[in-house]
Length: 161
Ligand code: PNS
Image (cartoon, rainbow, N blue to C red; front, side, top):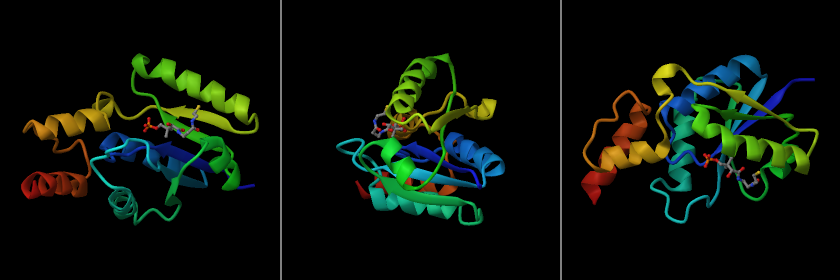
């Protein structure tokens, strides 16, 4: 049976750390679904359509990467998609506690679904969507930390403000 994995997140915005994990996942699993959570934050910087567009653009040449949205419980979405695995990235020890709680809660909610943790390349181990937004808003350089399309869109948001 083909192994189908779901990589869930807010992706506001997609960073090169996310891209690294998805690329690694696409090599291991038959298919990986990038599942963007609807309404994670009340005021996201990037709207849902834009986040979908970005991920689809970045992974257009990856036939086994799909981009989708979900709401409600993650395990329900995973089951609905008939996937077996949840992929999460682990950057540093500080990620561990929350990820551990989520993985065990998800296992309690649905024991058939396994969470698999993957580590991004070291050069991305300190970046997060939150830091990217903060650094960019304060005039810092984020080149090389996010896909080019994200950098371009960040620039447009600043100039249209
Ligand atoms: O990118 P993020 O914000 O770290 O992703 C968090 C996400 C989307 C994986 C998590 O908030 C989630 O799964 N939300 C869906 C609701 C749910 O199932 N909550 C219980 C998780 S134990």
